[in-house]
Length: 370
Ligand SMILES: *[C@@H]1O[C@H](CO)[C@@H](O)[C@H](O)[C@H]1NC(C)=O
Ligand SMILES: *[C@@H]1O[C@H](CO)[C@@H](O)[C@H](O)[C@H]1NC(C)=O
Ligand SMILES: *[C@@H]1O[C@H](CO)[C@@H](O)[C@H](O)[C@H]1NC(C)=O
Ligand SMILES: *[C@@H]1O[C@H](CO)[C@@H](O)[C@H](O)[C@H]1NC(C)=O
Ligand SMILES: *[C@@H]1O[C@H](CO)[C@@H](O)[C@H](O)[C@H]1NC(C)=O
Image (cartoon, rainbow, N blue to C red; front, side, top):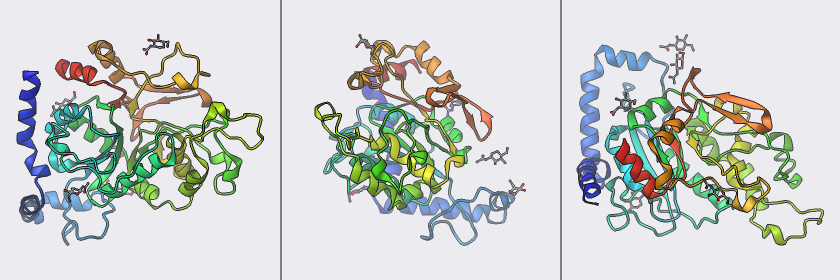
């Protein structure tokens, strides 16, 4: 315990620049930006920045100066959580070793739940909760609404260029700098997306807006480039269909022979994938998730109730197991008879940057072994 407290103290010293309210941060950031701009203005480095094809679609809100100077692109880490972040200490360790100019944090939690020193040991999360959060019903479209609120809040910062959706049981597998270069070197989003026509989740009442041909399934845990995050937030056509037709039902109690019956269409596993397929953006995706999870193979697939990702407890998080997860380099998609060899911008690489579901005990073990 004392050891853990010690590491929290070191974290605290790193935070103020990032989380201290208002003016101080602005002044510091402005000063840094200005100094750099002046230093770089006539230098070769600036010419390099200007001539490269690495231009970002900043919203026109005065970010960057008239000479085209731009701060580094950021990764927005978007946490979707019920209340607290039980693994905040793992993420604090991750962010502590990162460059604070290169990331931002947003949390969607229960309405009214505040992240401060009474609810988290890590100052990285102070006041990072959305102020317009909603009550989420797991398995319903309110989950998607929460995701859209997270993307929307993060889009307000024009420096955010990659948007990573994370659950409260996710851990990072690599350090910040490796994670950053992995994500920034991909011009594509990472969206697990595949055909699954056998499950009957598609509902013909979705026609004509959503055709069966465009219906996709995939992991909820996605990473988007800015363009796709904008598509999600601006969508006023597909989402209302999910909202209307995807409601949780007492599945087992409903009389299945009813002709119009359709099982819940599980918005969090279909909406994003189907939206991007309808918008014709699938060629801008790496069709896989960056978040590892595994299922209990001893439970029959028909047993929907027990069909949840395996939770890693302290004894499961062995160094060997974690090493194996980090080294996975391909994924099999059974329904499509497709094997995806993991790539980033055409270069073969390991598949996963994050993993779930981990208990605090398991996460602590990993932290100690690192
Ligand atoms: C910029 O893009 C063009 C066309 O896509 C390409 O020919 C050129 O090599 C690129 N320049 C840099 C610096 O990457
Ligand atoms: C929510 O409001 C508080 C208090 O005004 C603010 O400090 C915090 O940054 C806001 N959260 C976000 C994500 O903007
Ligand atoms: C991050 O991890 C990579 C790969 O393991 C390593 O080469 C690099 O030195 C690490 N960076 C930091 C800042 O620890
Ligand atoms: C992807 O690879 C190409 C070719 O090597 C390179 O020109 C481009 O800059 C890379 N894109 C990113 C985002 O790194
Ligand atoms: C898988 O399910 C079986 C049967 O419910 C259970 O006994 C076992 O502990 C589970 N394994 C894991 C890794 O969760």
